[in-house]
Length: 173
Image (cartoon, rainbow, N blue to C red; front, side, top):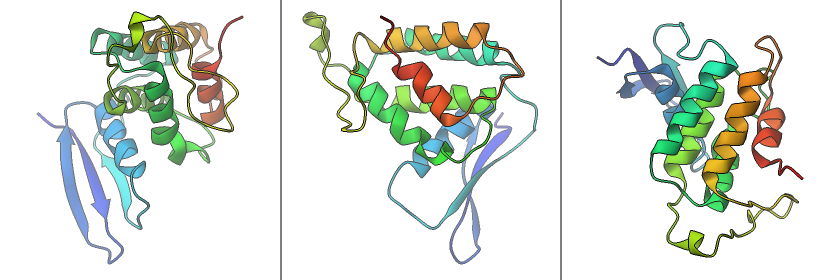
């Protein structure tokens, strides 16, 4: 059963149901993917129960870690997709755990799959001129590092887009 739905309102005020989802995180991820595409005037929102799929950052970490069981994109593609799908969150004052998990899901699902580039054990730069952090290692390492940090995070702490971006792109020394 699809309890959560993704809706669109066009610039004439007409509203359309785009798709139904079995969980709230999937619906938010769908919205983030659409918003990361071509610029548009439409407004998108998720309708459904307000109960979160991930009540805490640790719950979001569990969903994020589960992504690593699916085919792995390249680290550079994952980081580029992560930035692209999260761009609409830059002005949000606080990211809910469901939104955090949705950014990871949307980025992981839309990033180009790795095509044999891991044979050498290296990865390319992320491709952003303003990003001094190379996309080192594997995409799964970014997931694992983020999940560990979210599990130990204070559930009451405010997390903004830049905090999430720093969490994913930080390369331990």
